[in-house]
Length: 147
Image (cartoon, rainbow, N blue to C red; front, top):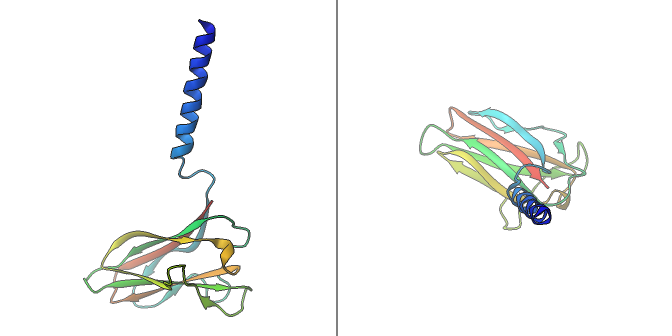
């Protein structure tokens, strides 16, 4: 009886751990803030005009997570662009993803959007630039999530 109970306990524990591992969405992830939440009205917003954010050392797969609020009209647009640079103050170039997209725009909406991103496939520093169009009360942010 004790042996059956021990085996049952082990089986339950193994299934419990396997289920937890399958639903574990946040543990063992790296979160790098590229652009802290910023008000977006008439002017372009960027995380840095010179150095960008150092992403060296981040390996594996990841995603850029854009947070946005483009209000108040049906023509309000918030556009994101990512630039890369090899040195702290060198020349930045526009990053284009595998689908050939270099900018992401969101019209009259609020929410989050993700773009697949592999940190070690680009230069060391990243800069995010957000350009509003007809936005009077908007916001934008960008986080790089890697695992």
